[in-house]
Length: 121
Image 1 (cartoon, one colour):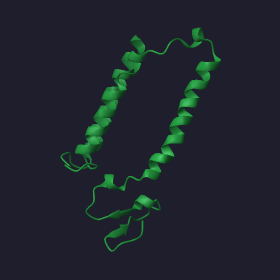
Image 2: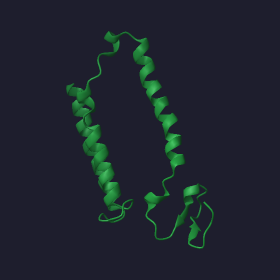
Image 3: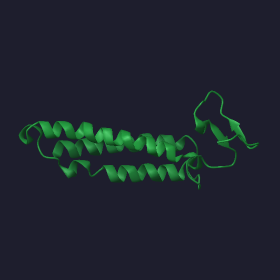
Image 4: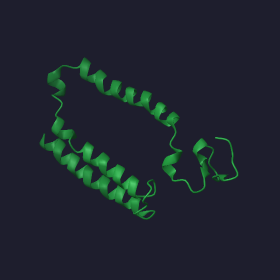
């Protein structure tokens, strides 16, 4: 990004996202480069998950239970909603710092749900 008269560097940051255009919401700063950097990491995580499951006998690992992972979709939707209505979205209905408190509460709540689903499965 080339500096423009409306861009100011954030103090102490050297990341390309540190140049914030005044008046634009933060979600505009998401770059395709960041998404492309995340794809190999996700593939590495899949390999780390899959390699032990292919090398050990099924009796040692047990079957995958989809019921244990049913909490992930509502958790992600909750994070997206908080991000959209918080400081990262356009309505800005949730004030600054309250969105972080909601994320923490959501994380604790879904941790409890995920733990109970995994234990009961």
